[in-house]
Length: 266
Image (cartoon, rainbow, N blue to C red; front, side, top):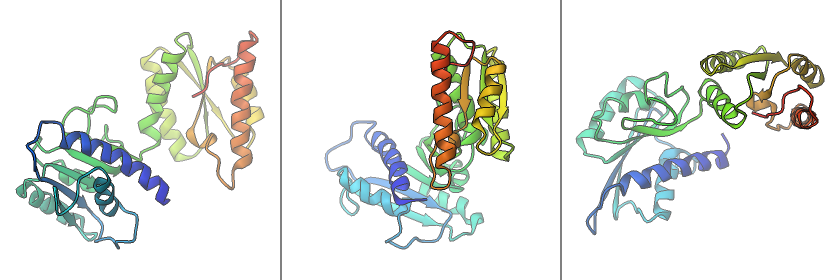
């Protein structure tokens, strides 16, 4: 992952940490204790990783390691069976917040509920894994950042689209035959059924967006729901991305003119 992307996620983590650390009035001179739990080896100081970037960014917010901040770092060195023991060590050290990186979240989950846990890059769906009750209202003591793109966000995007266009009862979704696409479609289907919406799945073959949009119009969908990668430009997919954007604009204009074609964009 590029440095800029990591910095973006770390910024989100830090905003959560700052809120957790200052949730209650603290006496002057208070020294905070932060725990970082990672399944990886100790990182090179020059590498942009959460264990390296968190202290740097916290310093910019006035939390200085060795001053008003103590950071307890624990690394499993790739031995995942060590994570629970390391998490227990952090609990014994009375850390006030635990930043759990990737697969360390499961181990950190065993900590007392009084210790907030910040997910630092969860590759799993935090809802299905039982980390949180829902994305909108995590509940419990776990919050943070997830990289799970497909199943986690598919139902949420449909929910937001339905809220934006209440009259939409048929929503089209662009999909491919990839496993990730199938998982997203399944989640979107569940959300659609719960909201009385008919989901029209339109397969995109390569860059044939013209055919896909023609199919979508024929099915009389009321809103368009492309998967994320259809609108995300990449060096090798500029044409594909541009066609998706053009298709979306065509849909909006067509609806504005009074046709029965879709008029929303997800």
